[in-house]
Length: 273
Image (cartoon, rainbow, N blue to C red):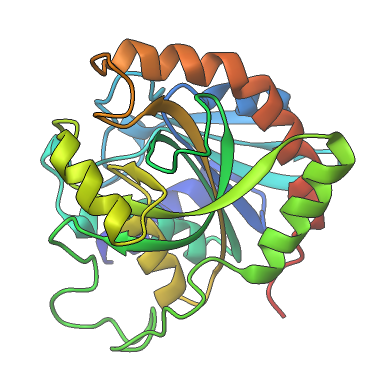
């Protein structure tokens, strides 16, 4: 039995449910899982081969529950390159979700705002990404049971899912921009010169996560929606230094808005045909 099969078998025994939607919750955003009813929680440490979350603001547990009648899995915390994990370890949870029957992945993250039109605390739909992490989770021999050797990434973030999210945001009177997310490895924040470079090449947001997971999800044919919370303005935009406490504080301030958006959006994300 492979590591992937071991983790899937363990979770099937623990969960006894078949969700179609999974949500990955970024820094300070784990409170969404509290909105689920009939919850079952599984600490990451108990799941075979699952990477542990060491980042501050990541609870490190899997929660399955109901949002109305919809079965949802929440991954409260994720692994990052800067923690020393390989790209393949980072996307292991997404591959487990796929094997459990999940067809729709929703990613949230904390991001730095590069686009000068954004305010701290803004929610932004990711429309595309730029991978500057120097790594790709599909490097090495391809597992044909997961997906093709050369997967298409021309619509990495489902345009239909973004359309649904924008409709919901308008109904709830929640401002929701769209932008391109640049992923760097971290853990140091970017320099002002790096931010000027990122703006020049078309990035609106910058962060240290999400892109490997999105690549793996697309490789397996899953549909993706991703929402960034602009928890700080990137280096050089404001005359102040960046610290992780600010990231968590801003995430806490806007999390109720994000929860409202997710609660109304998730039931409308139909599974893949």
